Image (tube, rainbow, N blue to C red):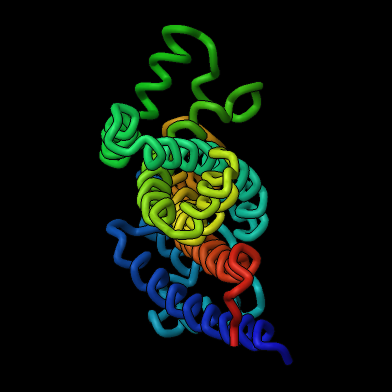
Length: 309
């Protein structure tokens, strides 16, 4: 078995342990939420008998250890349970919302990565210039700006005042633009800062000076010789940001009424829908674990000197 195969097998085994830890944590934390799920589902006018009946149907009248054993057994069988709010299989509802969340996260990652890399390269090449100052200040502002505030600002400007783009939903052309821009801003700032720092370090290397002395074009030196060698830490930041964007989409999807997993999670929390909350968190955790594994494998493609053993 090759070194890479052994590495992947080891990482997958570690991932299973990690996801098991997440399952335990989310099971316990969800039950710390204030409020009685049975009372929330039954409604304010329900009698105590009706509430007790719903609690029995959900298994909430069982000891905590029994509830966890049932949850873990279902999980090992690939069954995330049934939603207490809609009585539909949790996995089916999540899979129906997952494409919307992935579409939004991928769009935001593309916007954030391309914009951030170009801004970071420009700032590094024009170090100490007004452009460098502008990128640094813009990146700092982007990191500090709350997502929900920016989302509301974009809705007021582009949807309410200018009528250029829809304010909510996913069924109209251009509906993804505003939520993707909102979600991408933080990513742009981080990628730009990382690209600038990595490029400044790389541009000082001897091989870059040698390429310039040999008469290689400025663009080729920057984007082929320097950026390629500076790309490893940038790739790490982009991958981590993609995971963060999946989780950060909760607020953005709520602000823009985007029908992804984030909006489903918020609705499930308000409804105290324990199985749905647990299922969504586990799917988020699984995606982040798989993305990190994929990025680790991409390192070998970016830098052939890297070998896993």
